[in-house]
Image (cartoon, rainbow, N blue to C red; front, side):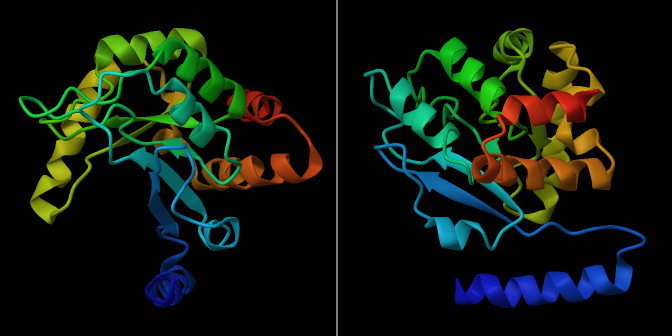
Length: 206
């Protein structure tokens, strides 16, 4: 968190200088433990504007892990369920779960589902994304880049979104900054005042 605080100071300085041109968001990818809990306390999570939650263990197991995914989605700190299967082509099949149930709860909680653009992952592919869309999910597209040359992997995420016929209003990356920041704030305020996240999401999607 000390390193995160230093990063946040740098981000805040850039936003103060270039905020009229672009806006950097303070974000983090948290790990989903075997019990569905994050490796991030509620107080630490509150220091970030955007929290992604992703599984990084038990990715070769055959038992159902639906409850693990649901616990993470229901955490009020979480905005995006990232590479939920954790699959890699030729290496691991990824998490086994009742994905229709996972997507239904994500839609209810106002949590976006990530379409990961790494060609080796294609974690939520277009067929699975189409199912999530029909259930009512919204999405976050990204490259999963770990180096700058991998930023082009975002094209793969875009391709899957297009094949799934996901409209722009369902993709948080396509929203204007004020709408995106409002959704990020809504997700947390819902847990405080008791408003259902899905009600806030519906207002954002109008």
